[in-house]
Amino acid sequence: MTMKKILEGSKLTVAVEGRLDTLTAPELEQALEPALEGVETLVFDFASLAYISSAGLRVLLSAAHVIDARDGEMKVLNANKDVRNIFDITGLTDALGVE
Amino acid sequence: MSLIEVRGLKKSFGSLEVLKGVDLTVEQGERIAIIGGSGCGKSVFLRSLELLEKPDAGQIFIDGQEITAARGGQVDRIRRSMGMVYQRFHLFSEMDVMDNLCLAPVLRKLMTREEAEKKAMGLLEQVGLATRAHAWPTVLSGGQQQRIAICRCLMMEPKVLLFDEPTSALDPTMVGEVLAVIRMLAKQNMTMLIVTHEMNFAREVADRVLFFADGGIYEQGAPSEIFDSPKREKTIAFIRKIKYFTFDISEKRFDLMAMQGGIQGFVEKYGIEPDRVYPLQVCSEEMVVDFLNHCFPDGDAADVHLEISHADADRSVIIQIASGGKPYNPLEESDNFLAVAIIKRTAQRTDYRFEQNRNQLTIVL
Image 1 (tube, rainbow over the protein chains, first blue to last red):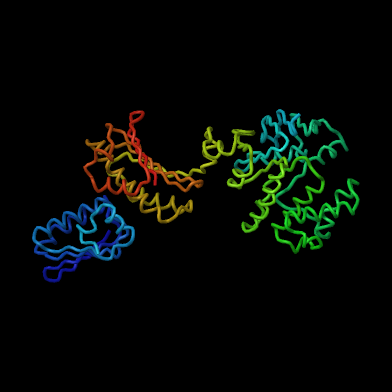
Image 2: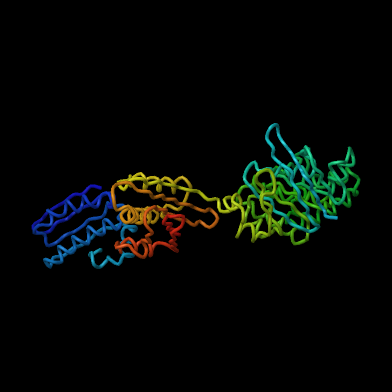
């Protein structure tokens, strides 16, 4: 898994590439913790994300809690069909702002 | 007496014992499908009935006459009551269809040329090739040639037809027309023994299915018994054609990438639909990790076994996870509700049991 962060004012875009699973989710979690400081709009660009498991979903949920707490907005963009299906079957599509 | 009776038939090729004492009784009008893996002896058995393979031991009775004890012309006379259809059609290429059909009965003085032609036309009409009576075999398709080859057998008015993989040399587009002819014969109550790889055909046409393995009839029964509820291990494996992927985990910090790569390779190797990869990987990861977290709370040592099986017959894919440690059903007890949701919404069926001191979770996709 690799990620690219772009901060524009209070908007952070995180492009994640590869797999977000039990092994790699902790890396994303660690990277997000300091990066979310002052962020009000958080966008995950999953155009190059091939796979997500519940470990990845939990990281997204914690990020959503942080952003919600400051009345910000979170979006998940460009998820492929399989990844989108995981959001759908876990009922997180709306909660995580999956578009 | 039965139409065919085989007692203690044995046949070896060098040190390879192919038939280890086969017994079989076939009644008039029975349709028997013979199935089994390559080299299981099913074709050798069929060929032995006509003495095309000379048995090392045993007796074969055809309509009450013992072909294994017959000599010279007597063998031919008994053989005449059987017709054999081979993979290859063996039509004479320098004769037209009609000459191919009339040759043997006229040569053997069973009928005059006129009678033979009349009979041949009747048979060609039945198999839908009446207009090809004067065609040369080389201009006919494989399926047409095989239909002619079946007619050639029928010209001799055999009491039993033996089919040795009659469709396996054919282009798949031509299999149907040959099977249609065999179906038609089945309806006419012709006694038939058919060595075949066409399982659906065997199920539909046969009264009895013989599964050959270990040098003989390993299991036999009605098609529904053999195809839907086979009893013995090798029959089950053959019918379901199960392929396995296994992965053993002895440390909590296991190589997840190796497991997921192995699943991907398994799917690619066996031509399983590519859209199965994701559900297989995600269900395996979720449950393996959940067992590791709950059943092995102390230290890094773990004992989890993942097995994925795929059955060609119904295209089912089954994940089985066996875990040591305390009894724990992740689908009921896990605090990872996301993992449980993924499993429950992805699986067709799940089953958990604690057996032989191990947690056993089955996920049918």
